[in-house]
Length: 395
Ligand SMILES: Cc1cc2nc3c(=O)[nH]c(=O)nc-3n(C[C@H](O)[C@H](O)[C@H](O)COP(=O)(O)O)c2cc1C
Image (tube, rainbow, N blue to C red; front, side, top):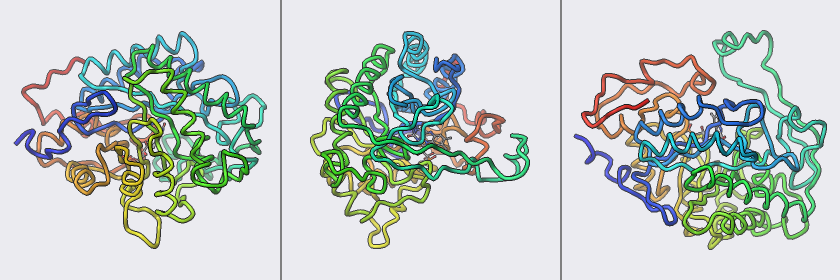
């Protein structure tokens, strides 16, 4: 009844030179729980450790800013990896996660044109090209959320300033900043880093032809569009050495473009994958809200399958995977070597454990209330009815 269920999911996987105990990663999820100066809090250590305790092979942290230069920081209360205080705070997180035999990598990000104007201090945001994000409407969901947030009238719209294009020299500075942040993540006890090239932030703005109109070596073709990601890999690898994990997250979606599709669909995905061959990343990570929906009217092949094949790199696949059967199917179909689970692990810290138990379980729906901070439904989040004899909570 136990581990023979979902054999692939619960088999170890080698990411670069490190082995994770199973194929389940916690997807990066921004919580804005850091102190105002970006220092990770004890609450964050407890939050991540609680989920590591639930049986994950790998935790990928929320997007973290690595630099005080060039408008890197994206959010208020976003954690940073810039100062000695940040390193100290993150060390508590990595220790707490490691105590549960779980690896942890830090997601490093640059906000680019969608950095919160309140953290930019009057500076223009930077991007691949001089574009302006259309902005987004916060939390478009339901009345219940409005009620708990005391919002009357329409949901507030988040707007961003006109971005200026980075110079080639500044692109090198950004990549250096990421490499320096990666070295500090290792100092904080992390097993590696993930570079955020997805979801509308700076590297996505380079990779996506809709926001990259450059005519130099950093734009104009799939190879040029991913050049910044290759440059980052090169510098980060030098900074952290061969033994640490290095992944790159990719997506079509952006926070300001939720139904985003790459021009040319799977054709562009294949070119991006090919351009990332031998890039030094140990794995790529496909982000979406439903990995089966590639948004290409001419093909049914999931983007993660296409990119995995074209790049020859292992793939961590994310988006809409809700249960063990869904995860196993992603692995079996060639769409994934590992899966990353986001909202379900907000909602069910014991997600991996529940799946491994093989017992029928009444999963709660993906609900926005698990996306924001509590209230959590504790009956769902802490399923005390399922007790593993080998289960010995320490938190
Ligand atoms: C509240 C929230 C915060 C998120 N923060 C991040 C983030 O920091 N970095 C990132 O790459 N993706 C982030 N994502 C995207 C998730 O990692 C994931 O792609 C998305 O939730 C879909 O996966 P799921 O269906 O397993 O939830 C976030 C998503 C949500 C809902």
